[in-house]
Length: 422
Image 1 (cartoon, rainbow, N blue to C red):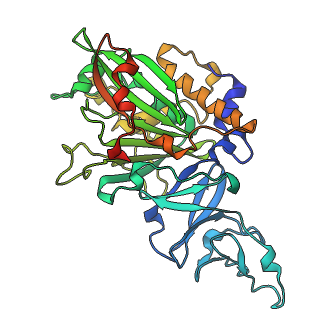
Image 2 (image 1 turned 30 degrees about the horizontal axis):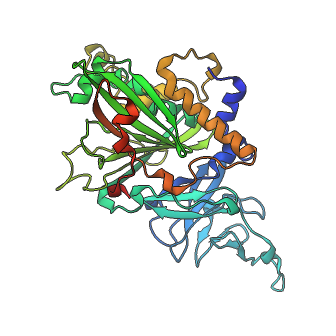
Image 3 (image 1 turned 90 degrees about the vertical axis):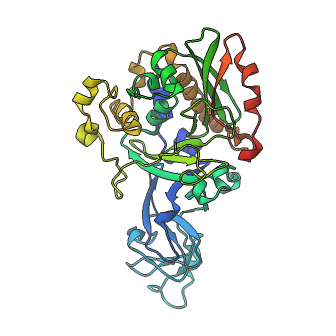
């Protein structure tokens, strides 16, 4: 279990909180590029880390992210006019450029220089991989953009979607990095199960290896197989502050596999935007030349609220007949819904001091420690992990190993950055 004080530190991400300060030292996803499709398009509301913001694309195509409220009388700039390289408040006409500087103040006398003294809080934005990223921390500590492979790939080799979780960000993370739950929560009956399904359905109590790294942590789960001399390993990565690389759905023989990349961005302490990003370093995701038609990044959701159509307001569309039949273990429509149901049913902020954890929770326990240690490191004037771009070129993978081969010896070739993903 986690103490109430540590749980408070782990889950609160608003301005001035230890975890909020930590998140603000990284580049995080803010919007999909398609949400600001062209210069001078309408602004959009954004909420990140408890801050109400507004984003717009100016006449030159540059994206800006502002405090939503005009510094004059605090009216919302969501209603503003996006025109001539700036966002103009419709209340009194004050206009701000992408840096946050007031460049026009028509409500003041012509001889006034007051506009030169007024700025609005603005956060820098960069675009890559179909995403608008922002940095909300101290300008003097702004790191380089992370070199995730999707940054360099053509559009047909990557896919981005996102949906809203109605709970704290770390509950989504804990569900995703929990290796044992796939043997139960995501069990499906299939006439043609994959090799992975055959193993995970039969062997639901893996052993774990967790290694803290300079980007967060690497974790592996070892399962027995029907061959007593062979074990099955699934290896994933947790990358600061809230990214996860998921092991492939099949047993791969190549490091250059397609990658599922999750990110949980706090909207506020009780809501999270769950980003699901998929890329393939070598092939298109679908259509001619794709890998075996394995790609699926479609999440049915409301385009305005970003809620999945199956959500807590309709009990996640659970079908008790399907559950009883064994076609799926839960009777819920799909894997993302199952994960979300388990995360949200813990409450908007889980009461971790009431938990009873076992050895199967090893990965989660270490992830909590990594986050809390990083926040405390920053509090004490140190540098948190994962800010050095060269450390982020990692790859998730699955593999069979002889049962008598030590983990690090068996996977050593997979721990070298792969040029195909550079």
